[in-house]
Image (spheres, rainbow, N blue to C red):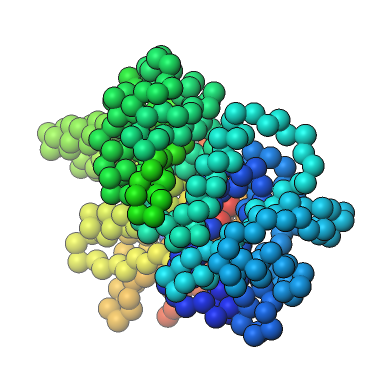
Length: 502
Ligand SMILES: Nc1ncnc2c1ncn2[C@@H]1O[C@H](COP(=O)(O)OP(=O)(O)OP(=O)(O)O)[C@@H](O)[C@H]1O
Ligand SMILES: [Mg+2]
């Protein structure tokens, strides 16, 4: 469906400032629908020069039932079908009447139409539409809301509502049902709904509110007084102790340039807030843990390095060196997990796999390759996000496989012209991620048996099969110039997650 602005541009003759005015109106009129207990519709003349009107906007009340089950936006009416709208538009007057409309059934609808004044004069009409007969109690609350609605309707007629300045808050603006306070011209409380009284209790105000000067309560006093003086709305979050947070939306009532009062709508968001705070601290804690694990692993790694300097046997030196690199690859995962990605993953514990593989590749290129040997390692494709339970073993596996290419694939057969290449390919298909590590080296030795290999491939198999429940295959990849090459293919199930999680 077309956006509000697109529809206004295509179907009406409104210019941009007028469109902006109406867009501000439909962004903030939910409150008015609630106050008037009725559906609100926005009518604007079509560009067809035949007096017809189109409906550019509609909002249902959350305080009462709607008249419109179907969406009326986009409908076009001939002037005779909507006489009140036509009259309001052409004479700039507020019109009241009843009209039989074919909605769900044929229904008699009570309609009030208000001309909307924008920068270019009268630019449209807003109607409030409700059932003629209602069993709605005519309580003080309803009378107050209706009266308040009409003060805003007058502002619309004079071009004083919507406000030029648009308020914004982190949470959805409160609605009338959340709690409403009506303030008079000197910011004294004229009316407070039961929900508003409860919200004030939670903010520590237990006095009878009626007649009290709002700023004297000390609740966002400065902000609201300032907004009142500057004739603009404001949304403010108020904390009371550590437990209670209330959002307050203040809307000044303006009468021909004079502020004559205000509306305060309050919402207790303590629960939302508490959940936010918990999530935040949980994520921060997880990151901190990863950071510490990484530091500990680095300590172990340097201890082993010191030890390897003290032993004489080349085998012992090599073994300790291997351990140092295995630990380094695990530390790298924790380092990645300890960084704030700034993205909204479900938990702080998922990693983008390429983010992990790339630093591993760099590590192998920088430290594991023998002097005089050059290998180009590239990473292709993407396997999306994986949980850390997968990332951890997978990074060890990747390091082992890359190390093997450096150790075995390119040592013999020194064709100087041929570039030594390793390609890591990642892909993801529904719930299975695949990774291949392919080299163009000498290939596996004759009689090679995966089940009876060294420690490296044993680690790889244990992690892939037992830890990750996946599969592993090794075969000649068919390298150039008589080289056999080697390809290791891994398939690892990632239950309940898809590439689109990214
Ligand atoms: N990419 C490769 N190209 C050629 N041969 C390979 C390749 N990868 C592994 N191999 C062969 O498989 C054998 C077993 O590898 P594995 O990683 O299990 O042990 P390793 O590398 O010899 O010792 P380590 O325990 O240090 O890893 C190697 O010795 C080598 O012969
Ligand atoms: Mg190895």
